Image 1 (cartoon, rainbow, N blue to C red):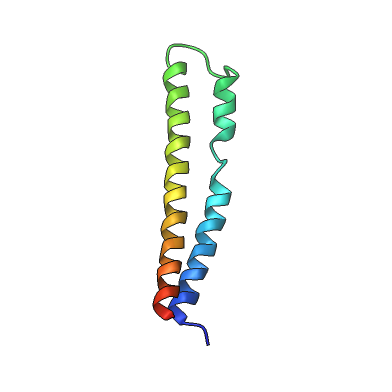
Image 2: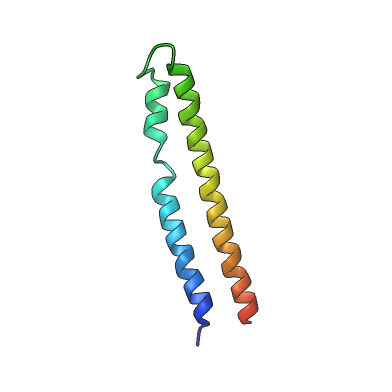
Length: 81
């Protein structure tokens, strides 16, 4: 019989992976629009930098969440034997 904690953490990992997949490209359209000069003017450069920075931060946080969930599953499996 599988350990309930391991099962719970595996389900959490699946959810984290699904959300990560859904959000990974969420800012790509905004970045592409900025790269194609969809917004011009004095603030355009700053906004371009901000949207690219936010995309990078989002992807970093998503990667950390996936790594953390995987680590917890691995630790629970090791503990369960």
